[in-house]
Image 1 (cartoon, rainbow, N blue to C red):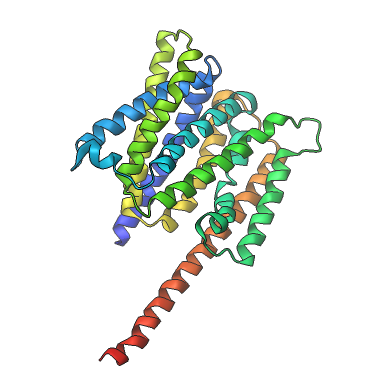
Image 2: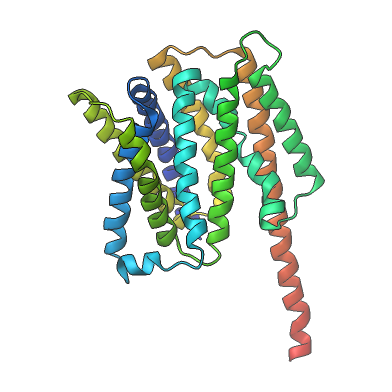
Length: 307
């Protein structure tokens, strides 16, 4: 990939993090007035409709998108992500944006920890040490021994875990299915999975909040579409560190709009988790470069024998 494409992808990722931050601000507003499952249902009705319309225009159409070797796992991914979004919505309403995201940023560490048993990838002692340090940072954020700790503080941790499983499942199905297929299954399975609970808890929505709901749907689709575009332009190793910018944007918006407080333990813990996460990403890049170099050396060593 060219340097220009990488830079474009990185700028896109910054915009994406801003969009996702605005999306969470809107989600907090809506989930403070309406049932979370209803909000997520409407969001995924829009997402699923967009996925169907987009897929229908591709070569092979919907039939090609449905053709997957792992339909159960693809459907599981869609259900997993809607459960994760529901939990994050409840967490926004109970704990606020900053506290929720400060814990959820441990997601890359959980992905690194689970990539071994799930995908069979090798995780060295350095990355395990970084994961342990990140765990200490999460404990500092949660402050389980303090008087302000509540069970709700564990919800964003569950969100991070479910998101990690979703990412690993996505990487697993990517071995056989293309991006369009996974995008289609995520939208449709999520919409179908949320329909029954969403309709069960349906409440009338005001005209102004329908406007916010439309904004939420648009930011969701725009963010995911741009995310796919960013990963088409640049390698994941160049983009993943920028995902931590979302915590910065969330902190600014949480303080400015909802008057949330940046508690010292949250700031200290978040810095530790982000540092550990960046280290694991760096070690992953080092190992990937070493593997590519070893492969090139093996090819070069085999050439004299073939000539």
